[in-house]
Image (cartoon, rainbow, N blue to C red; front, side):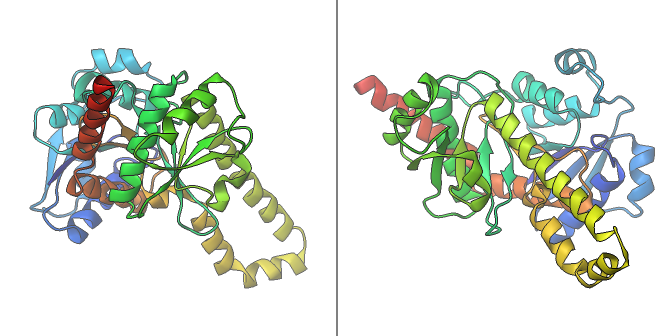
Length: 335
């Protein structure tokens, strides 16, 4: 099992990438990692030779300021592009980057390619819930516009992933909507509701955004425009709450004392709300696992993304998505 990683992507690259990779090869059997980037910088943190870590040198990289499509097409030797080529040309089974999200989606589409039968890919992080189980949200921005057929495929892919990678038996699939009644929503959600009712998933109906963090569903399906807003609302709310808590606890000596007593509990709460603990955001619908790690990933988050990709490979999630989509296509042809 081989995973290629863009060692130069992310706020803490290459340090966090290298350290996360070292932990991964020590914890995961039969895992080989190709780190692609500036070899001198990488070896600053790769203090000793690891037989299952290979360094591939390039001094070119894609930054967050680069225009995604143009960068992928013009920067042929960028670490992210070489990483995607590793997958395309069979040198790796999966790839991971914490770099430019748009560029990674472009590299995934143009280089890795889509699964046959999947019309649109979906960017899909696992977000935290109060019961600590988390839920998969897709799409969060790979496509701002979507058709009912796209959302149907999102639900199928998300359900397979939740079962095979996250180990959830009969994952509950919900459709994000403005109400739980089956007649609610616009034409997109109404038609998608009908399609999901007949899909090979455990569809529980419409779900509302206020219930997401309560664990109302294991997989939540929506279009990329709505999903991106929901994702950033959750992120922003969590950051604002902790900022308010910090201001409150630092306001006087009594609250500072209380903060000292509750320090460990507050740290646990913060970790509970950190979705990087669940790994990265998978680009579903591509011909191989492509994982977008959070831009601010530390070594622990990088390790989580590598573990996620490893399970993706071991459980043959791509193969199961392909076979399910083909079965549905055959049924449609018969009807």
